[in-house]
Structure formats: structure tokens, C-alpha cells
Image (cartoon, rainbow, N blue to C red; front, side, top):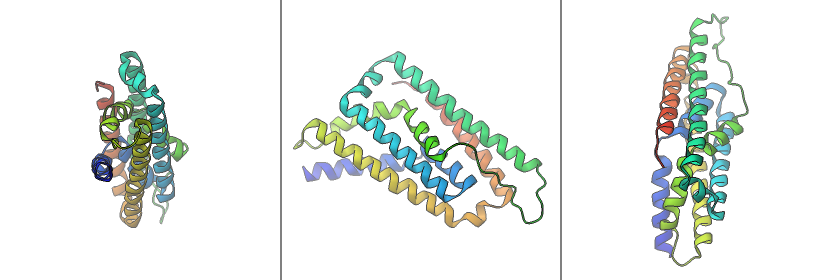
Length: 209
């Protein structure tokens, strides 16, 4: 059972480190408003995983994964949300480019909205998590535990790995804060993250269960 658990943890670790919408959202928030808001965003994302995990254990996520209509509704809502975040980032880069800040000012402006809620919504509105949990977790759960207990344990492990990985990523960005606060760099990062978020929105909108 221990070997199965360690193997499952390794799979979850690899999947956690693959860049996706969550990392793009965290990057945007951490760079534009600082590491504290970045960590709050990570907290929201982790809470989103726990929401999906709870739904998976009680069986509701399987209904979503099996229902084409429900899946489409959630994925379109998620796609629109990611696209809106991307458009906001692009608009922010234009404002930075056209602004004429006073001497010593960086031209930075913090994004609107609660960072924890931003992270939560970006994760909850990603139906791929439901497919991932209902399709993969049962195959990874240790055979020596009941299915519900095994999946619950893996959900908690995945949430912990996400918290550590994205939290560490935010702190790395914070160490390079002086670089990212340069107006030209901020504009470039806004544009890159904006395009990436819109790209992920399109990917989510065109994804299949």
C-alpha cells in the first residue's frame, strides 16, 4: 500500500508542476499586486481543488463528467472567466504604456477583485479537474483502503502539493520583484499573461470531456 501511495504521489506531483491556467492566474496576480496577494490566490486555487475533491468523493463530479450539457456549461463559464482575466491584463499593459507616472513611480496598479476568490473561481470553473479526479484518482487510490478514503487521501495530497508548488513559485517571483517592477517588464508580462490566459480560455472552451 505504501508503494502505491508513493507512486500516486509522484504522479500527482508531476501533474501539479505542469503549467496551466492556475499558474497563469497566479503569475498575473503575484506580479501585479505582490506576493501576499499571490499567496492568497494560491489559497483560493487550493480551496477549489478541495471543492472538486469533495464533489468527487460524494459522486457529484462524476455526474458532471458524464453529462455533456453540464460539462459544456461549466467549461464555457470557465473559458469566459479566463478570457476576461486575459483581456484585463492586456488592457492594463496598454494603460501602463500610455501613462506618464511621476518620477519614482512604477506606474503599477493593483488588479481589482479579491485574490482568493480569483483563484477559487479559476479552479472551480475548470471542468477538467472533475474529469481528472473522477477518471484518474480511482486508479491511483491505494488498494488497501476503501475507495472513498483512498480518494480523499489523494485529494488532500494533491491540494498540499499545489499549495507548496504554487506558493514556492510566488516566493521565487517575489525575490525577483525589482526586475518585474520595471515598467517595460511589467507591460511585457501583462501582455504575455494576457495572451496566455486568453489561450487557456480558448483551450478550455474547445476541450472535450
